[in-house]
Length: 373
Image (tube, rainbow, N blue to C red; front, side):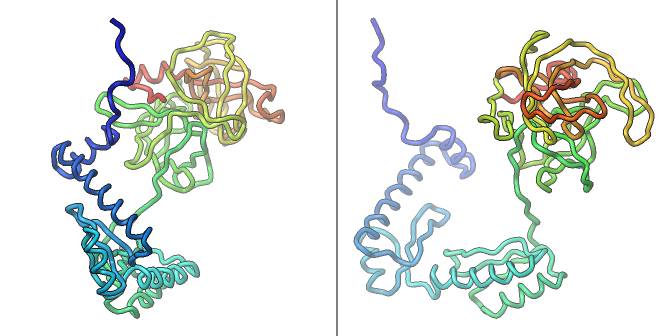
């Protein structure tokens, strides 16, 4: 008998979200679902009040999942409670706190208060909270002096952790070395059996700290490249918490990012493209595998013999190293090198050549699994 299609109703909430919420709250998935149901019901009541012109002055959920609405006065609070929601008449409320927050923003716009981590409106406490890591700088002192003028309306929280932007980075993006202006290009994300995340790149691009848009996102871990010694140009970096390498290769505006489905090696002659920080998206074909080359050092150091490389007619320049090669939706490798004075002036179809480190060899050597889309 043919099975009927579409007879089962879809779950109200995405199952992974329910599981994650249950784990974070330390409750069962059933309890997590109940909390989401109650949250939706309260939000619906609040929307109904606003449709009737009772806008309130901000609303917030407490840790138990109960919604409280700030009322302008006792009469409005009574209307809110009649609709089945908790209400209070705050000492300040959202509008007044937003005004204080905007005035602090204006101070920060004149000079960045380094050491002041964050400031925000906290409706539950009816205050603006200011988080501080270090208040020794002149700008931080001036900012905190302004904050202090608001008295009890502002709460200063000292001893807070510094914060930084968290980056999801496309293969082929620019990454700089330590605190210098030197750069390579981002390769592929992969993981070990324990789920630890790594950046797979050219070995000569492995260094202490790698930065994307100024943010330290990875640290050097292992490399088989050593200047002046017979080498293999493969290496990996550990990914710092909160950052990730996305599973689509950036094309520098030439097309949509290309989803990575696997790492099956393409045969010689197959078409492929590479993404790199210097020349962007350039394309060509695979030449041959298992090449050994002698690299000269542009800084005057010793020559280095590198084995295990593949050739291609893809054009590259300095800084493209480590960038991602892909054929169809199969990741192929990372830029290793190319002719010293090569210039890629014809865009995507620039004439040229390059060597790349095959990805499958690198994954196999380090025991990693490619992250795929």
